[in-house]
Image 1 (cartoon, rainbow, N blue to C red):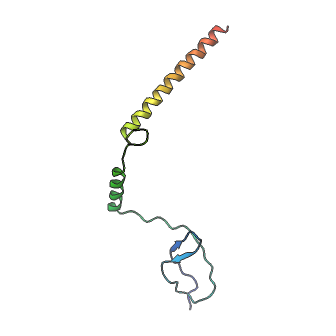
Image 2 (tube, one colour):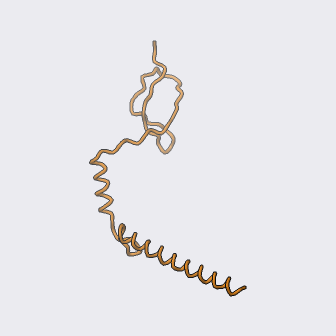
Length: 102
């Protein structure tokens, strides 16, 4: 009995064409194609370490003069504290206005 269905992996090109990884074991003729995204391949430990080395190597100061990492986190923490202090002062001023309006 002839095989009527096979699963073959391939790559969907930007122009919509498919490039199959292998020749399907089917007779020539019309076929029905179902396309689904394949799971991404799992990185090996060495590939992951290489990625980390590349990221660490890319840690250069940014346009605002801050280095990534701890300095940026500290800058965000200071900005948050300043904003919270401004909100506290605004809240106190609003309460003072409410008391004076009675």
